[in-house]
Amino acid sequence: MNRIFNIKLLITTFFITFLTVSCQEKMIFSISEDPGYTDSPIAVIKALDGDRWIEGTVDDQNRTITFEFHVLDDFSKVPLKVELNGKWPEMVTPETPEFEANLETQFKISVNDGVDVVSYDVIAPKYEFVKSVKLVKGEEEVECTLNYLAAKGKFGNLYLYSDLKDVKVEVELGDSAVFVTDPQSLESVDFTKAGQSLSIKIKDVVSGHYKTLVVNAAPADVVTLDESWTDVTAEYKKKHALSTLSSSIRIYKTSSLNYSEGNIGYLMTIPAGKVNMQVLEKARLGSNDAAKISAAVRANPDWSIFFYMNGPGVWHIDGSSASEGFTYYSPLVYSAGEVLRQEGWGGQPDNIMYAPALAVKDGKAMIAPARTDKAANRLYRYSDASGNGEQDWSDVDCAVGGYFMIVNGGDNLITGRGDVLIQYSHLWRTFPGYSEDGTCLLTNFTTPSWSTSLPVTDHDALRIGRHAVGVTAKGDLVLFTVEKYLNTHNQGQGKYNKMNGATSDPYGLTLSELSFIMSEMGCSEVMTLEDYNWCSFVLQDGGSRGYDLFMVNRRYNFTTGEMRPESDEFVNLAIACFK
Image (cartoon, rainbow, N blue to C red; front, side):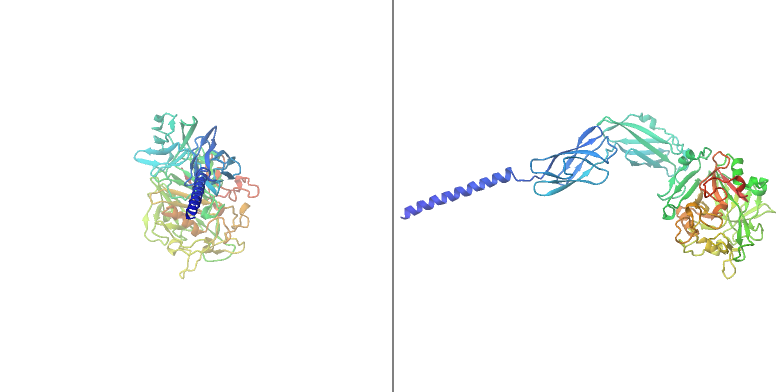
């Protein structure tokens, strides 16, 4: 009996062991040979690179797909083809294995690996045909900024386009690129024409296609400009026929002055050692017609930039708020050792306020509080607008007066911003500006009100079209203006209608904003010119009237945009010319 039981137990144990081993072998076979998913769901992915298909590199660990494009320039609609790995993976996004992808933005491909949905980032850089571009002139070397096949370099110590000749261009190409242009031609390149570029032809040995590298070189800016400013010198010379524009002059434009979109400003610069100025004075020109800006442009075809000052009768120097009985301010004019016009309110030498003047000597520009002695034909400069620190300044080539000093020694003389104006020191705007108790006595009628004159400090806080002249410590000249169409009472015209300088007005600048902008640029001294349409900048275009940077009253009809007859122009007290 026990023997039979033992035999049955042995047989049962055998069958259990056999079944267990069989099941384990079946399970091992199932897991290793047919798991139902894959770690590498994408076997092959290709993209159309121009006229050829290229294969991407699939990184399953980091979930990226990388292509290297040699031909394609437009990545907005790139044909792609995906081959999946085995029977388990399925496309999720996009749903089909052949599709167009916008590779200019982040693009993902999602695939079900048999169990989970996994996503791959598609990386699609253009091949780096050019690794670096360097400009060499004398001891100065400039590393260009590269944007694919566009290289730009700006010198730090050369300020004129005329200096940019015999520039060596050093180009390092990528591994698959070779020169088609003779490299010897890059040893001495001429960039003296503003906006001129160098084209270098190269060949891609991988695709067989040809590419063109474009290199631009520019001289240094004489002031520090933020990215909103654009050098428009070449564009304006061509567009507005400024064929006589001196090679020393650079023109810049911004459409977001003071961080306000649509607020347009212009800047013109001449580097130290190259500033050439002449001054014209009404009486010396012989007639009222000759003192109009159109006549001055025609009579001086070799001069590039003109600014004129009419000397409007809009001021009271006794604190009056009346809308009549005004006086005017006459700016000084000095040239070649002779006082052509003496400064003063109402043209009276006793009403001196030691206003700043722009003077030029040996090609360098300077600004300082000044006055003239007409009888002695002498020009004097001062350490402030109260007449302190007098020095003889008669050795300058010429000088023209402005209105108010707003930057001195690199310091902003006005500490307010926007509509909050903190009145600057009386040292920089004194007689007849203040009484002994500090009350502002200088009022004007150029306000939004048609019935009263307001203190000049109220006028300072208005956002209006303003003009200024700045200099750097080296003697560079900076001419600045902000565009705003206005009539004589700060009434906005054209697109600036009802924009009269209030807090909500996004166009124009307050006096404090103007001083802040120009001091931040690096100007050491800045003086204001007349506001509104009584002063503006005109460029020589070889025509009969000159080219205005923007429309101003008495030169243009704001309704039609057409230029008004020359007979409507102001008769100016002083005109400054530059080249």
